[in-house]
Image 1: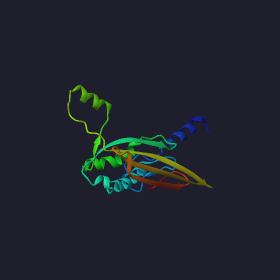
Image 2 (image 1 turned 120 degrees about the vertical axis):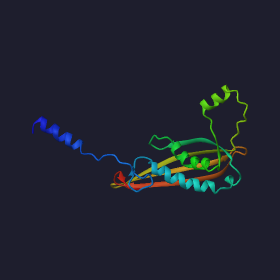
Image 3 (image 1 turned 90 degrees about the horizontal axis):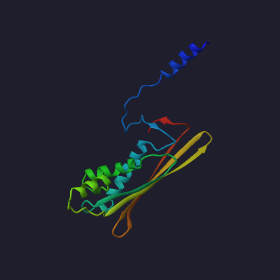
Image 4 (image 1 turned 120 degrees about the horizontal axis):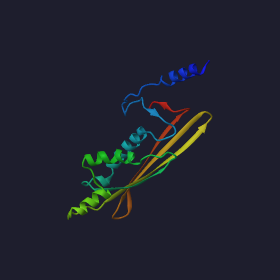
Length: 179
């Protein structure tokens, strides 16, 4: 085979990929990666933790002022941990269950520059957490487990008033499609 034939074959092989399509984020046709936390892992852990949090006594009285603490990523993958927090805080704020304290430097500078005398509320609670992983192999089977841990701390007393831990485990011989 000459070089031109090889190049033509290579172009045909590369050009025969599957076109990108939209998928239901809650559907069963999403890519499942054993090597990293997927968006559906955040959705699963976040929704389960949200249900646990809203049923805790800390949320039985009004809309407490919540500040986001740090979420430590102790996995091999680099990702934005706000993906987990947003699965919890967005429904809480939109339902009026919490007031979220925003410590954005730009917003604080703008407020100061405007001469605003408005009282900035103090956080009653801080939400913090950690994401851990454990990987195992047995023959050709690989398993990845991701542990999502969250703690709600009452600022005034410095005590944890709610804690939750959710485990997401994926197993296979290679990355796949499915949920």
